[in-house]
Length: 284
Ligand code: PRT
Ligand code: ZN
Image (cartoon, rainbow, N blue to C red; front, side, top):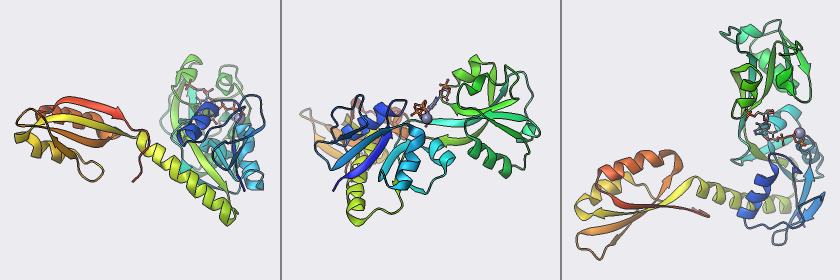
């Protein structure tokens, strides 16, 4: 029995999908120019597909699970379950209009023409905001539509914003924050679900490790109490005596989000020789 996973064949999600599997200790070989491969050291079969096709393959059970952008999942609207956010492929689906236009709120879009490759998501957004607008579906180069008079607005994926900028557009509304997610077929049998749980456990350990750093620092013993109070650690920080009298070495784990704040406070409290080290896996 093998779990069948669909990932993007070639595109923005391909390398990160393979990298995530590798970080989970799953090695794929012959990933180039192949439709299908098997992992050496995990009961996993991997299909390489266009991202747009992944939700359908997973709904049909041709693949049991898939890695795909939330934007594609919600646009295709297939009968799948979103199980886990994967932390890569981050972008947002936004409305853009010409830079010289005045925009106050979404009612601007009333009776306008919106070019997009995401008609389902846009339609839903318009309905929720009681807006009547015409959706013009195009499959690529959406950002040129206003400049050539095809539409008044666009709805497209944005990451840095430079594509919008280069086309004389500005971002005025974010409809969806998106990242790659793991989706699963709704009718997995027990052995398939067990394999998925095993894979999910690994993915979650890799994700936690990525969001956390291991920190080592030296602290004067008379400041230890304040310094320890700043460090959460997995249970509590490790404190070891240094060879130099009156000093200790403190080890702990810090979350990326609070990292810089805490480092500054540690320094202010007399911490020295602070080392920050990446964590490979984190099992709690
Ligand atoms: O061939 P296939 O159908 O598999 O690939 P594709 O061409 O449809 O998709 P691909 O590889 O371009 O993107 C795959 C997924 O990556 C998307 O579905 C998103 O989930 C995610 N992703 C993340 C992005 C971006 N960031 C992104 N910036 N997908 C597309 N873009 C494009 C966007 O469409 C626009 O043209 O990049 C441009 C904007 O980028 P900035 O940085 O200029 O704002
Ligand atoms: Zn695609």
